[in-house]
Length: 114
Length: 112
Image (cartoon, rainbow over all chains, first blue to last red; front, side, top):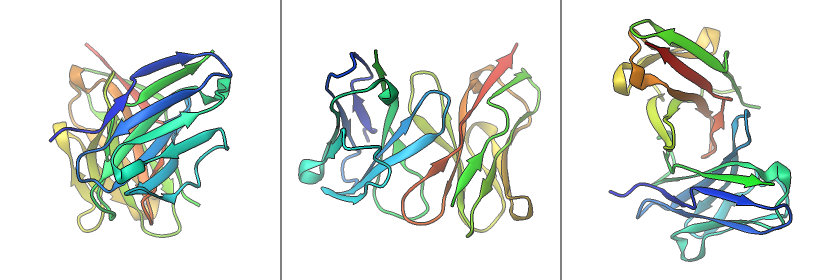
């Protein structure tokens, strides 16, 4: 079974530019999550999809962030325009169903805004 | 509100020594508790989890953790550190819904 795949693994962009991160969950996993870790801080929840619907987007920092999951398969997270404080590691995770089980995480995208 | 505190952002141990990584949580209801590990250039990997039942939980690679409700703790231990254990470790809680709350992580260095 392929794991959760994230593209790109690293991205360096200038302030004001746009970046799109992609996450391919494990096939058949309806639940998809985005998390972010700013340097030295805790990993924080951004949002949760169930299939193509946003179940919870309470962690999205502001309207410069847009997440989509068209067709309920892969998801994209767009940052436009990027600011310096957006730098960090963006993790995607997926799970087959809710409940107490842990997720399967991707290896993350390290975003650096300069 | 839920929160997770990991004492010590960096921990160093000698190879063969005991590993103890501390995690305390605050939660108004019984939580589900997790430890994740991140090796360099890899994703977060589940080490172990506590949901219900036995409070001493065994995970992969010889790690275990004990849920102590009275102390609101879920410390991670391993009797004998190996060089391959060098990684960053994250404690997390999940109370309701599907959202995890993570600690700030503890970077473990193993000294040969």
